Image 1 (cartoon, rainbow over the protein chains, first blue to last red):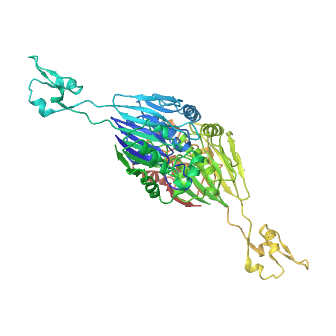
Image 2: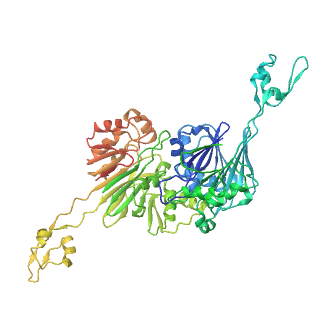
Image 3: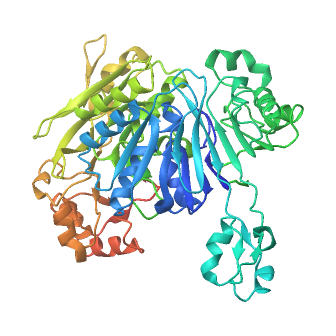
Length: 302
Length: 302
């Protein structure tokens, strides 16, 4: 998995930055998580293929998380998209997007599906061959979900050197070996699977938590996550503001990472009130060691 | 008057450019004409003061002309705007923006007025002390207006050298002089206004025509305009496409400029299919001499 930041700032009245949007590469797909204004321009800038995106996840219906969506969907029509597009978002999004299509007389001619998020408990919303996506119920001023993406255990890797010792094992047998089956020779002799294959790589996981007030009860669900992206709109000196607006501080984000025993924490959704974003890293670093700041155009290998 | 281009490309599936949006400085105001996605980022980039904008004109409800509007209006709330904002647009825009405010639970707390454009004949939609704005009915796939901005004749300029010859003319008399009145001495002697003042500068005018098919009947209304911005989505070699999509070619835009006897033509709304935009200038230049290409960040003194 690889995470690419397109935008990572809060609705920013003051500076020249892009609001929340990111691409997660997993399996052979690119998942789009949140879609702030200008997202399609960022996708082009960082050379993400539009056609690899088939699933879009919208955390909540504040403008800085979805105002780039309708323009992107319209562009897909212009470039002749044929593949399905699935959008996972609070129910009102469909109403809003459809009204915009109506007033602009836009006829979307590729299959577009809206999946309404309404649950207040974690819900599996996508289950593919290679990964799953679950909602992480968050608490903000409006109905909000984070998203937990988990790779499935991959198939075992062929140990080609070991296999070559047995000329009777043809390519036709490889899929069964990958799936963990032993090999049975014509003589009836069994070669145990572990002599012919190597264990698969450990499946990785990613959690996106934005926007939310400090909500430690999510730690059970995201326990041991490889990468946690958690909002840090404010610094601890403005924790009253964080509480009032239902956002988190850098310290609180680090507390979540620590309790969840995440491998790494990426902070984002910075308020533009702070001229020095490095303060977020310093503050979180006192609680949790492996912390990085999100930045437009930056990528994180998971 | 001064025109500033924020974005000047058609809904562009291929390249890293901004859709239609521009600022016209006139009097002491900044008029915003069209509001494509990312417009507020462009306003910041080119250092336009948000607070000088009180009037926004939307030509038509295709996304590349207004998808930046709702984010901008939301930002104004965040920065504590108190001044009125007036939006002149096809009626459905109000419905769309208000639904977006509703689903995002955005409470706009400054005075926001929607003025519905519905007429198919030219209509005076704004009349201030220093300028007027009229619609220019255009023909596109959806109800569309251009906008004609005309400065009013300014007051006469004081001829301070001449005034100083007459100590009895106090500052109290200046406004009457500017308004063209003669000065009457206590003795009853009349000093004619033209001996004390200079003629005002010639009022300038600007016409924005985008999007539209070739529509020469607009030339009467925009006759002698100082600057004409006219869309040129296509080159003449694709005039069949222009006709089909109700857009114009560079040559057709030049024909309009020529028939309207415009002082200068600026072309914009380029399709991204052409790698060399200079072809637009060459093609138009064969019909009309004083032609320039719009470009993000470029300004035109009128």
